[in-house]
Image 1 (cartoon, rainbow, N blue to C red):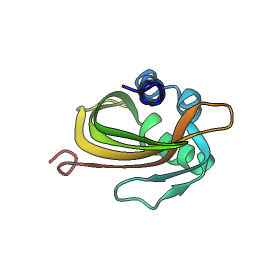
Image 2: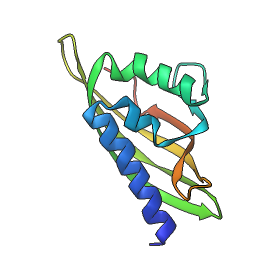
Image 3: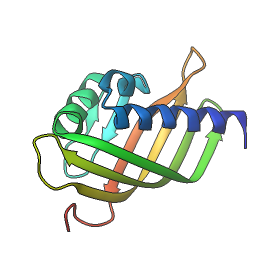
Image 4: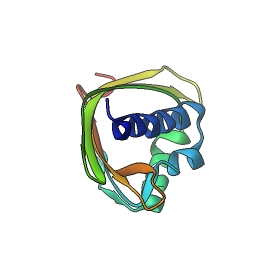
Amino acid sequence: MSTESDAIRQVVQEYVNAINSGDLNKWLGTLTDDVVFLPPDHPLASGKNAAGAWVKESFFDPFRMKLDVSFDEIEVLGDTAHAYGRFTLLLSPTGGGSDIEMVGKFINIFRRESDGAWRYARAMFNSDKPVGG
């Protein structure tokens, strides 16, 4: 495994840890300023502020979360990389109620920024079946 792949896995782990601890600011730190999120059944969110607003309203505020991810592929091409894989996301409503499990796949594009850190530049995910279905 390359040093770049290790660094990408590290930023993904930071992303997962931020979600699992409910830390929106740490999650935002894993994104480029010009990130584009392409969430299922929603318009795209362009820029860190838009992505943060969307994820706060859709996930961080209404749920406690437990995310697990695995990679099928990571390919590094200079200062960009792409990866795809699978995820399981357990959503526990903060207001009470039954947990929701989302199982799906993702594709991400990462960019190495001027400080040398890899961050999410593009992110798209969807579930393998309707949530709750």
